[in-house]
Length: 320
Image: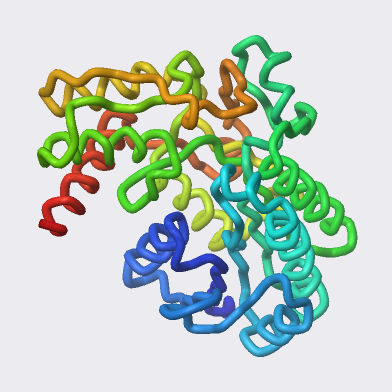
């Protein structure tokens, strides 16, 4: 009889982790599994600081999961840039610590690593708008991208030591609950404030000409769930882009939000919102995820944008 799935999720109380836990808890009743949330602070089943090698080993020894989904990270590029030492410690060393703990304490456990398409960096510019595949070079241009690329390579190498790893490189993803450190909720939060009458009808923006491949967070966590619950060994040792295959301009995102608001809003470029390193177009090829995991994104971008705006409207209504 197959062992009951026991999934340990790091970063379970974060934006992506919260949606992942929700998806896993809502699986059909015939899918019996045990969920263990691991992290720092309130709300987690297990206290875990991934930068502590001994602590990581102890958690794996005690929990004996069948799969680990590693989400814990310094996830905002701006935060990583402000404190690069911390970003390297958490995103790279923390990942190696946890993967090593899996290899040593629970060798039959599948290790799912949430990387980032930011690892491709300069490769996007050389592709001239074409979709990037998993075999393209990792040439990160940001601290965040570099930490994720290094961890990605380390986890890939550890597969040859026996780690049952699956690596993901998700492209931009958003949804309700995301902070305004990211572009769509940054726009949506400003529009919600304008609608609430707390600020003038002026929205501050960065570079609107950039084009990005956007996903809904609920589609992204479906891929992580498929990987954690899957039994096909063909997926192990592989890396998968998570992408829609379509790049849309940041301007079109803003236009959609303004249209949904029904307001006349002035757009003002703010130097503080212009990223020091920006790629004109970033688009991904996710055919491998479809072929080996059966994953394809389901949620239309406009629905996602509307959901993010509704979320921020609700936050300001609740605050009144």
